Image (cartoon, rainbow over all chains, first blue to last red; front, top):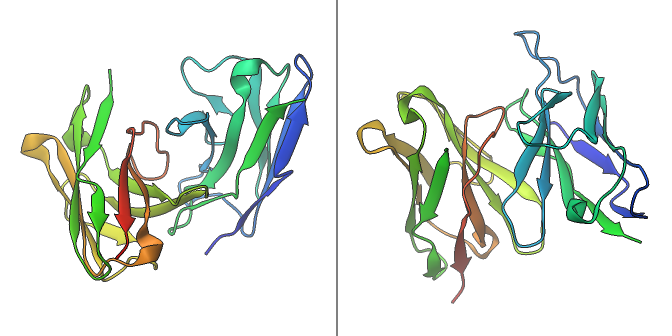
Length: 112
Length: 116
């Protein structure tokens, strides 16, 4: 199985400051169709996960533009340009290239 | 708007069975692969299974292969997960999600507790 490794696992951030989460995969995530199925999800406390970013860098509808995704191959990053209180929660990267699909361990973002 | 509503969770003894349902609305159900994903209490997310649009192809995580069966009824906009030979480690909130590789919409989840 493809192992997804996130860092850091805990991310205390001051309101208005930037935040960055790294996600590394144990294999390349480029699929045979040319797409890279690396997605990012946010799970706020007590809620279901919500997709933020799909295929590395495509922001979902309704997701604030302070969220951005980047990367290629095996190395990916989620960035929040200015953290707001509503961003508290756990962030997961997930690969949909290789079956079995796998998630990172999660990064817990909290306000300092 | 897209809505997914899981049901069927509950308390079951080890070795028992349970059938989860997911009612879909707001989109053309038969056009989309569907998936189940679970989350043990206080833990991360684990993909469980997916099914293709016609219900003719399925795939499972190794942890549930041979015990769980995913199915769908396109006429009723419904997705199912039949869970047999349940173990304590199957205790989790089970989510249905639209698509396979992209998981663009999720339901609110249903809690399955396996305990004697």
